[in-house]
Structure formats: C-alpha cells, structure tokens
Amino acid sequence: MKMWLAIGLVVLIGGASACGSASNSEGSGSLNPTPLKKNGERSHEFEPDDIERAERAPPAVREYCEGAVSEAQEIGCLSHVEESDLP
Image (tube, rainbow, N blue to C red; front, top):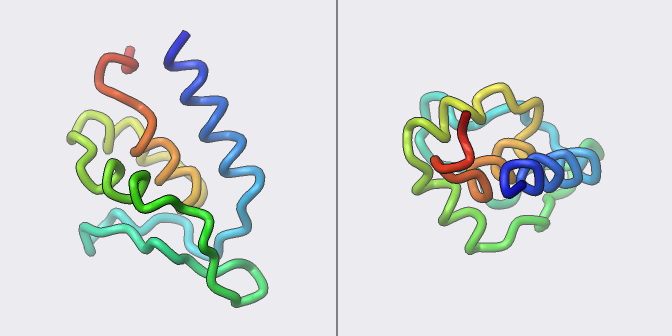
C-alpha cells in the first residue's frame, strides 16, 4: 500500500511539474532544488526536506528511481520511496 502511495505521489508530482531537465543524478551527485520550467523560469516546487531525503536515498532506491522522466519525478521518487517499498 505504501509503495502505491509513493508511486501515486511521483506521478502526481511529475504530471504537475514542467521541468526542463530529464535527470540530474548522473555525474553531479546532487539535485537541483530549483530546476527550470519549460518557459525558462526557475521552479520552486520542491520542499527542502524532500531535497535532503532525495540526496540521502540509498543506492537501491536510486537504482529503482533511475527511470524517472523528469527531475520532479526523480526527486519525488527518491524522497518518498523507501527500501522496504521495493519489490
């Protein structure tokens, strides 16, 4: 049940956000707390706690979330999915 709630949240965040970046976890090691919207403006949709939880996500959760199609989905997944939710 908890996993479905997390997936629903990820879909909701991903659908409501208009981010310009597909993924920021490769290479840099940190997430952008204010990604660009499609119109070039900065987005401030992420709570600082979500960013911190996403940056501390364990490797298994990072691997699970690497298929995210936007930074919003990636942050939502990394910050709300726990290892106990994984199949």
